[in-house]
Image 1: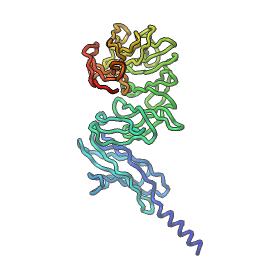
Image 2: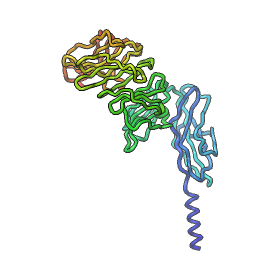
Image 3: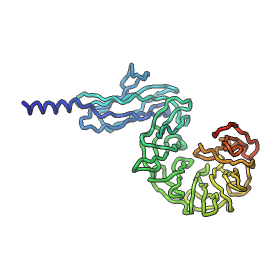
Image 4: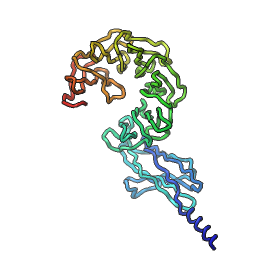
Length: 363
């Protein structure tokens, strides 16, 4: 009897154990459809997935939009979604004992990801609409410095978990997380999104967007801040050797490395103009940080700021200096009266410098 009772308890425990929960990933809106994905359930007693849809966050009035008895089938596309539609979804896992586990409710909102903002919140990456709505967490590992790919379909970022630090990439909904490098920083997408240039061990490297074909491009003393030209044919960067810091360009394969500012000053933080014809950079000359611009071949160098203030690229901008989309204006910060930083704009020729914040605190 005791043996039967023990067996009965064992059977009861097995039957009463609910299936492992599957969770919905952030939902992607694309071309009039919601692309819905979820984590795979690998329980031995798995029976089915059921995906529910509702117009209410409490899932009232829900309808079944998808079922599957294949545990590896972890995606479904809802078509016919109009603009600005908000729908809610939940995935339910059922086991062979007809016990169920429900995921959290996840919203799908028909918006364009190029109209979204990716940012770091409490050490993790979130995404939201430009109006602040639909904020969604994307990462569960401590992350920083997220950047969209040119087409908005992927996000590259840096993470430093205990054993797998480095550059990561993921789809814009947080799925397909891929560890690209064990170190590296200052990463930038090529204009077509197929490659990433980055700094590793004080040299410039390039790789395919999937992390393959990682190649070292420079071998200088200290090479930093690489950026692609708008047409993707060249890379601009700063290279430091003891006592001298200059601006260089090179082809994307590392060939034709050209020193553009060959002098005894510290020149750094270069950036191409939107049309690729100019390079903006910071230089420490006459014991003052000032902003300069030159043609892409290093000619026609012009000093843009000369105000006895310390002028810099915006600290909050991962791209350094900010051009307006048409390239006619530049955003920078300047240390007013050697006390506080204010945000300024100026025309691309240095004229019409305007203090936008003009206050008594750092911005």
